[in-house]
Structures are given as C-alpha cells and as structure tokens.
Length: 119
Image (cartoon, rainbow, N blue to C red; front, top):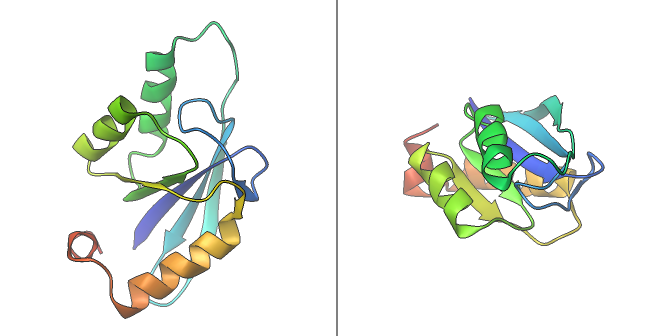
C-alpha cells in the first residue's frame, strides 16, 4: 500500500502551493486500484509563520510516499525528501482523479526504482 497526497483548494484539482494551500487530499494505492481516504483542511490564518505552515503540512502527510502540488519552495521540498516523501510538481489545474489514474498506471506497469522500495 502506498499513499499519495495532493495539494488542492477545491478537493478536485491540483491547484495550490504546498505551504499555502487550504487542503491536502490523500489517496491510497494498492497493487490494482486506488481510492481517496482523507481530506485535511488547513486554516488560512495569516498569523501563522511560513515555517509553521510547512511543519503542519509535513506532519499531515508523514505517512505518504509522494506529495503532488502545483508549487513548492526548495527548503520545503528538501524537508519532505528528508522524511522520505517525494515532492512532485504537476501542472496547475490538473484534476486529482487524472493524476491518480496516471500514477496508478505507473505503479502497475513500471515504477521507478526509488518507488519500488516503498511499495
């Protein structure tokens, strides 16, 4: 089983920055299928400093192997990699369902070596 997080503003599209987005939608993938398992909502309070926003989101995706977003800063991406979470920038506005289908096909056919270790 593998978990993938998608950063979103509307639970349907990959359309937000990792540290500033209001939602993270989590999908679970197994050997032949995938399903949505959780949506995490974040308060968009301006009083929270950027570093704390990143910390909250890293904690929320700690059981994921991949994080898909439209934008992410270099330091946040490095912190995800330290937690063994692979950040993946995708086209802004892509449907989460489309991205999940593509990932599922990749997982079933020929996953990259780094991903095989996590599966």
